[in-house]
Amino acid sequence: MPNLENIRKQAKQYLRWHRERYYPVAAEIRANLPRFQHLDDSGILDASFKLSDAQELVARQMGFEGWQALKSGAQSMSSHSKQSAPRPVLSSTSAQLFVADIKTSCDFFTEKLGFTVDFVHGEPPFYGQVIRDRAQLALRLVCEPVFVGNIRKREHLLSASIAVDTADEIKHLFLDFQAADVPFHQTLKKEPWGARNFIVLDPDGNLILFAGPAE
Image (cartoon, rainbow, N blue to C red):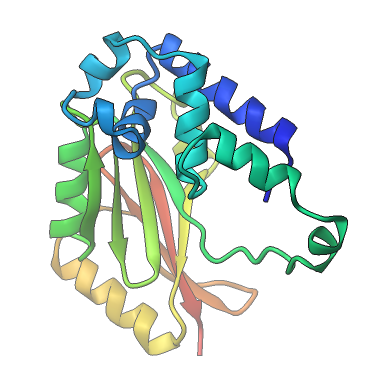
């Protein structure tokens, strides 16, 4: 369990996000605090939200009934239990792509690249995630340019890298995408370091690398 001071800071961060009308926080509030479940995102951001609400939100996210229960649990941890806690293991990673239209992006990844929509948040949507097998791509709505000029293409700045296990899979994947008229920044290529890869260009100019072994 994180120490109590870090938990307090997390609650204050949620309170700041609500005051700044940071839309992703509305979904967290609705999912964890029953009294906000009937409100849409704008309604939640318009509603009164105090530090005590933010503290309760953090407590419920961590599996406690409320802030006092969380405080008691945190304070009762012995130094022995802290020392014997298992080392945290990072179980997954997800790249975040900045897009101008969540629906257009979801359509591209599902219809062209074989992904499925995991979830979409907001009305209108401002955040979502698409998945295919163990690959996850988060989609974040941004309404203005993220990169200056053509630096992304010129410098080949990747937004995400996705790997397959075998040479046959990377070849097959490229042919599938080619048949679906997917736009490429780079077609299938054998690299000097022993990889074979290609780069897809999404509707927002994000460069997504697909890589596998050459042989």
